[in-house]
Length: 219
Ligand code: SAM
Image 1: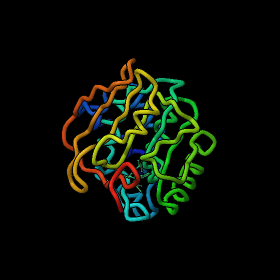
Image 2: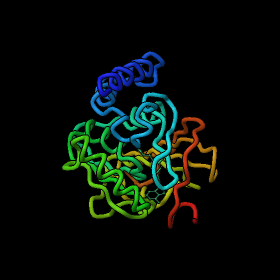
Image 3: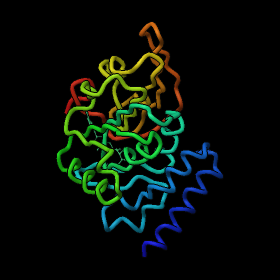
Image 4: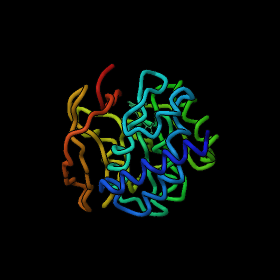
């Protein structure tokens, strides 16, 4: 079963490479090392290779592989970078980040049930020692480990949360969907300049669940 799942996963990764969505060898290697079926509900394992979001507990979703690849390529992660991942969900994205930066990763999730789900998945996949899952409101960032080289947000915000910009290093980057509560946002690449101001580059339409919190949408 697992061999068959892995073969299907390899085909998905190679399709993302052919389509030009996975552009770097390091993101390709991370995808091959961290198969998505380790982070979905048991009944969805057989669908984990399909390039679409899948339901996870708490009424949330694990993002589609192409979306995760687009964000990781934009982030240009390098070994040793200090990264904050907002919206842990299943923990899959955080494990991929850990594979790319080869050091500890901090990830914040607001739903307790998902904190448990992610921790179990990360344990099974062998990342529990490096990926630290924090229960909290990720719109406030995670000040104890700031400043960050990169902050990746996997939920749609009404606008760029100020605490996340504050917790970026100069030259650091925030990747975040910004737009409406449901259905449509634009993927922003926010770079913090040396003088503390920001430069925003927009990367087209995306569809994420809402980022709910003090500096996001209200419940
Ligand atoms: N990256 C995840 C993965 O690999 O499975 C998928 C993330 S899912 C699309 C978005 C997640 O963001 C949900 O689990 C949701 O509960 C979480 N979320 C929404 N608002 C949040 C907030 N203010 N702080 C932390 N997590 C939040």
